[in-house]
Length: 312
Image (tube, rainbow, N blue to C red):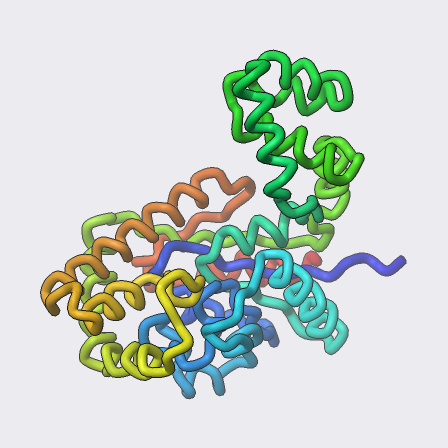
């Protein structure tokens, strides 16, 4: 079997210049960009997602943008399948796949694999809930240990959510939870890859940039963009698309639940909270080459990428 070719990953919180770096890398190393962003997949959601402009899209090939209607759902498992298929295609044409974005769940699915565990079953869960009330957690934990000692060792008796899920998986599928985890481990990404994390070294400066970017979105017509979605009549706030940062707050403004100042304030707060969650993910990321996103001189970083690509 031929050796796997390299792939580049550019990750980081919102408003750190991931798109700019991805385009620069694509032009320098003959690459194509695979978007790792759960908001850019939706058509008609351009301003609020900071979707690449026409000029940016023409500067380098982009993939997994505008692939879904806002009414549709798109899972991490679907992303993984699409990203792997695109990687094969891009590498088959002798180019470098560059995965860039801030949806860390997508990166984790790609890197760690996904176990195809059974969906929750309300009837099975109802029986388990009743057992928990009548017999107590220790009895259920003992049951788990009888067919899946590995999971029982990992799951504490006082963690009912994970305990019940482990037993539920076994009762539905006949397979222990640890077997699914073993399958997931076997599907971990086996391409050589370089992970670059664009990290702001000044959090207050980053917060101001993120707030300014939202104000620019408002000036560019973000409210009208959401109004068109609102007027469709088939969308609602429980959809994944409408949970994207900014869209919920503008939707509530259009519904009269918030005034303009409240809408802006809540959207900016939501943006900061998103960036905080993204940073939490990044702190746990292993073998991450961190780069200060405010450092405009990327020559050293790109030299590191060049060395990686050549060595791969």
